[in-house]
Length: 431
View 1 (cartoon, rainbow, N blue to C red):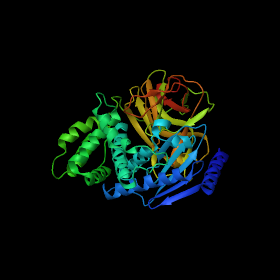
View 2 (view 1 turned 30 degrees about the vertical axis):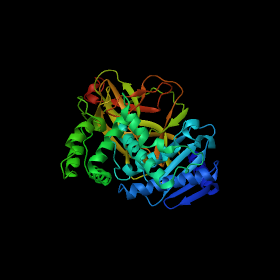
View 3 (view 1 turned 135 degrees about the vertical axis):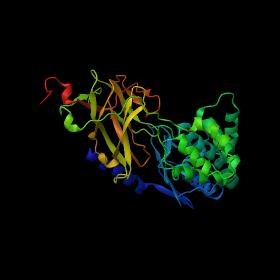
View 4 (view 1 turned 120 degrees about the vertical axis):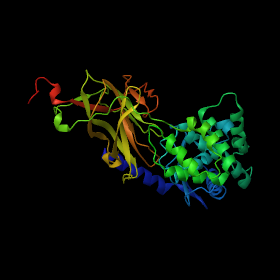
């Protein structure tokens, strides 16, 4: 509700007003609940990593990276960025900032990892064609190298709870790469490291810039990615590397074989049927960074057209909506897209939790279809989608082109309206 949004804004303003600050050239840390030495160390890590990203790698970095540190005793440790100039670090207590061997949390490496994400996201605003492994692998590779550079600049005694954090840099990455079996993120990080070795540290930024100007076909983004890479490779040395990287980096969303047939609204009966799995009682909410919300529906027979999708949710972040669209996809039962419907972020009210009905061009659906919703959220913009308390087995985490992961505890509060052609109803034919 609107009141909830006002309360959120009040709490954020209260935090910023009461939090202590540590500032250095290139970083500003606002914090509560942790000792000043940790805040100073966080500022030094971020400022140093930012400087290296600019000086050694030629990356586009903000003048100042703001880090907001909060303590939530019953929460879970987390660190994420807004894709532009802010980090959000949450810990349960100051103990989470102790050396990884005791806390199990790699805070110093994590900060360098997020600087790596900024280096990509500030240039490659649309990275939806990259796999999660590619995006995380980039941050793992660059973040590991930034750990090494921070150690060289700031020394071994940087972190208040002293430990050999140099071991969390490229030394750890190389051990991971030498393992008999590699995780997808590790494999991608190795490919990014190999690319850096071929073109040099300052050769990475021009490739990101070339990709940022390309127009990608979601069905096969590799075509545009390859073309842009070749244009940015005057020495012609990257074709072999790309042959290895393409299957790991590129997320293809091949279109469904089911034809995206549409119909004018006036040709429909005007009395749509609403398909529902949820119980209508919000029990929680979730934003999906790097993923999406999906629900499977079934119709009674052929000849139905999707006319609208209803979502119970609210927009968070800055009160002013971002000037971008989110997407609703109609997919077949295998998550292959049939149609893509973009909507402005302003469709959702800030902090006002309610049902939002999104009308779409009436599009024919197969007897079993999936509705996917993707908001490309960050820390400062996104939509919370609500869910209920029980799972029907028809809700998923996923986006088109990916294998959906079932929601085992709830159903998304997402509904679909379908209608038929007037001619399909023998009781109204000819009317």
